[in-house]
Length: 238
DNA sequence: GACCAGGCACATC
DNA sequence: GATGTGCATGGT
Image (cartoon, chains in turn purple, cyan, red):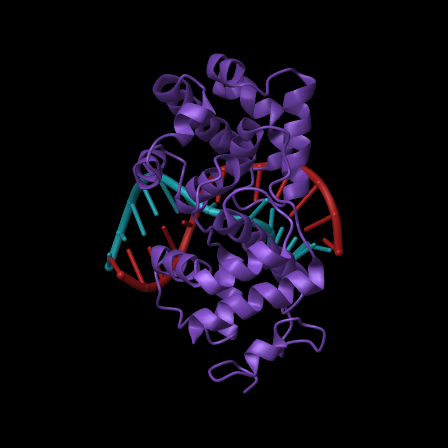
């Protein structure tokens, strides 16, 4: 029942907003950098930081590995928390360079949950950042959960508020891995590769999009594409 | 000027 | 386990 609502939400959101083509970024490495920089930060500020990195030819594993936290902090200043994030970024790049030779293909060949544990052991890489890297930079079938996911699905009666991050992640992964649903996706959507990866990417992006523009007010506004789900048993509008 | 944004680590109870 | 706090810029 919960899972059916999650699948229904995907269809409603996709119909409303269309494909989001996430993650913005030219290369897997840029996506990884963006994942760290966007922690608790609006994307437009991250864009400025990435633009600065590009302008100074510092957007590469070898450059970030080499320069100091202080120098890096100056460049990424617009992203906020810059002293913290400069060190976090260097910690991640150190891991990426020393463990995988800065080769994302080698990284992607590692078993997904093993790689997830490795990422989580890096200081400054938490669950959402690790999962963003896995899904969007490495095309691994991991669903990214965030504050919007909790906020929205709490109101829709899908979540109780007591679930842990990983419980929510697994619930969405399971709901969106339904074979009948994936066949529907394969038949009606234009994409390449693993259908789960495609759906996980779009679903998270749609949740963020929807969270930004709708359902911030109480009660749910009339244009909310999810109000139909809300009326199902358990939602706040029932 | 307050409030928030695509978190995370750490302290404290 | 739950809850509180620091980290900081830039847009509404």
